[in-house]
Structure formats: C-alpha cells, structure tokens
Image (cartoon, each protein chain N blue to C red):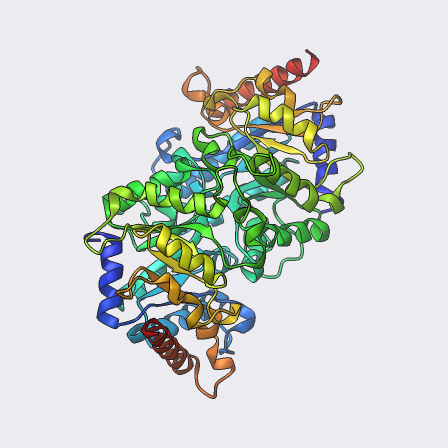
Length: 292
Length: 292
C-alpha cells in the first residue's frame, strides 16, 4: 500500500469529486430475499453488489465489523472477501471496529483489523476506527502501522449518538471539554504523519449530528481528517456537515449506511440501482452544500 | 444461563475459595512447539490444556479476542470452541473484547461477543468487557442482555496501562476525575441488576497497577464488581489488589495472563503443570493478602 493514507484519501476525493463513504451494515432482517442460501453468502453477494453500484460516486466503504462478527463462525472471513472485492473496485476501505487495547494485544488488533493475517506483508484494508479511552498506548500501534504500511486510523472524538455527551461533553478543569481534549491528543499523535495534502493519516470520528462541534473542531485541529457518521438515517443533512470541510472541500468524508444500502426498500429499484442513485444524490448534496 | 451473573461469580469465588481469573492470550511466538499443524489447532490445544489445568484454582478465564481475531480467517471459531470447552469445565468465561458501538450495531456485538450466534437462545459466554466512551447508548444493549440472559459486562473505568491517565485521570470541573465519573455511571447503569450477593452484573475494569485508585473505587461504588487486570507480568502484587475486595473477600477477581499461561517458559514443567502451579500460587497469595 503505497504512500500516505491521508494523501490517498485526498486524491480519491479530488478524482471522484465525492466526499461520500458508504457504510456496509449488513443486517439479515433488512437484506433482500434471496433463494435459500447461507447467511454469509447472502451478505457477501449483497455487499459486493452495493460496492459495485456505488463505486463511481463513492471514495470509501466502511464495513461495520459487528454485523459480520455476528454471523459467526465465518462472518469475518466473509468481511475480508467483501473488502478484497471493494479494493479491486478502487474503493478505499475503512474497517469500523472501534478497537482499543494495549501493548501486544493492540498489535494483534492491528493485524486483525487491517488484514495483516498470517504473516502477509500488505494490509488488506486502508484504515480502521479506534477508541482511545486507554490513552496513547491503545493508539500507538495503529500510528506505527500507518507509518509502516501507509494505512490510517480514525479515533473516536465526538460520536454521533444521542448519549455521546455522557462522557465526551464533560468540562475539564482546563476549560476544555473531553472531546476537545481528545481532538488535541489525536492531532498530537498524528503529527508525524501529515502528508502533502496537509492532513495526517491519524484522523477523528466526529458526528454529523453535532454540526457546531464539527465546525469548531475543523478550526481547532486543521491537520486531522474527519470521518463523519450520522448522515441520513441518523438525521443529519448536507448543510449540517458542511462545516467539517476546509475551503478546498477536503478534510472530511461523510458516511451514510442505511440511507444508501437499504435505499431499495423505499424506491422502486433493485438494491444496487437504488444504492447508486442514493449515493449520487448524497454526493451532489454534499458538493452543493460546500458552495454555500 | 440461570440467574444473575454477579451471584454466579460470588458463588464461584466462595466454592473454589479463589479470586483468580486466567487470561487466555494465545500468542503464536510464545506457544510451545508442537508437531506441524495449523495455527488455530495449536492455539485450541494449548488453551484447552491450560483451562483443564487451572480449573480447580480459578473462577474464570478471559479469552482475549484480539489474539484469536489475528488468526484469521477461522480464529474466532477457534475462540468459541475454547469457550465451550471452558464452560464444560465449570469455568466462567469473560470475553475480553472491549467493544463499543450504538443502536443495532451494539446489539450485533452483544450477539457476536456473548455467543448468541445464528438465533441460538442461550449465550455461550458469561460476560464481556465494554468501552463506554460513547456513553449509555453503547452499554445499554449489554445491560439488557444481562437482564434477559443472566450475563455480565465489565466497563473500562481505570485501566492498567501506563497511559491510562491520558484521559482517565483528567480532572473535571465537578471535581471528579474522568475515571471516578465513569465509575459512577457504571454503578448507575447496573442499579437494576444487583443480585443477592450485593453486587451488580454490570462491573468495572480497574487495573491492579493503580492500587490507590482501586481501593478508593471499592469504597466509592460498593455494588460494582471489579475485573482487575495487571497482576504479575504487568507488575502488580497481591498486596496491590487487596484493596479491591470487600471485607468478605468478594467484589473482585484478579486477572493474570502471561504469568500463568506462559509459566512453563520459566519452570521445568509442561505448560499445563506450570499453569496449574502458577494459578494455585496466585490463589494462595491473593487469599493471604486478604487476611492482612
């Protein structure tokens, strides 16, 4: 995997003129009916069809590890087949795993989540999401992997869910909130990995459902790229996420999962056609909001 | 899985007069040489031998998901075979996965990490570790599972690693530290699940390497049982962890991974014999420290 993750991300955004990331959240109860077959076969066929359909309008896909793990025992093998397929389509792949551990355990997660399996020299995924409640120890192995392999990591800073404030909005005696402090740590951890785009391979997850905080953080940590979940089904609009971008339209990608992959449930189209239409609508809506 | 997890834990502690949890961290580079076979076969044989050997001295085992996931593609299937084996030996099983997500994704992690696979009605594991950076949303599905299935959850509060203070020791404007605030949230989330033992099925991870904080938290949240990592290889002693117990010798279990499962590397014994000896020494050391 050549070069710097943040540079590859910026290049993909420019080439496709897209800031769209499609979340692959394969829920069996929402998948289309298929002839009798195994759960993992259904999931693999569905996810690959979605990837093919959205690839022209999308810079990245974000497989959610939880849904694949729940398809035990062979769910993760299915996820890696989908990831290989997506990479061959030229999509960047961000594994949404929110992992966190220390020392040699964190190194095992680097192997597991970036697809450095059984001594393979090249990672299969481009980036992974990380939870930094454990501090620098839990993030360092992902930063080292970024330097070695050209991968990326997105650290949870201000998440999109209603209760994210339980911890993240608490005010410290320094005057900062917990999420502001975390954003500063993320900028510091990624200092050595800033590429030609001006962004680091160590990014942050900042929810689209908190537009003020997104805008504020864009100013606060100008070298940290954002992965922005919460668009669409969770309620955020293109105007809500506009503040996450810099003046050149870089610095963030916006994720939608359900609103794209299950668009077929609300449109008179097959799943791939509906997903392609929804992804293209989202691409155009984001780009229009950036011009305001 | 009958009854309340905290009550089953307290009963196991009393029956075996043990507060020992053995961490299953199968690192290929530390496993004994075996005739040529697959990595997962080596790991499974090793972990099952360790479980059999330590079962008389140990209340629980804690498989570390990362090491199994790194054995892709069939590492997690191997972990579940080890878990079934451990349960048949009468050991409680705590899956160390530190998962964190929201909504239906968190529910997928409940299925994945407690072993509620493919519509099975009974979980295969007793408890799981959880990271609560996302607030209540990320913990609620595990609390609901505890009510429904009699499982448990241990939420990261004050972890054992050197950089745990990066976030956890920050002082809030309320005067509390982040980890104290988190401990209070854990007590609150588990309020409805306090069993006859006086402890809740929603516990906390508090590192043995911070003995003062462990003692302080034991007073602060008297209904929250502790999973205490950091003993042995990470440097903590029996005296360091004594403050994590109540006057009846309940309220905590202490985990050692490397110091037990790889004891054979420093003793003239086979892996099982060495692990049994190390587990029994740890059991006695903890019990002696409680009498001081």
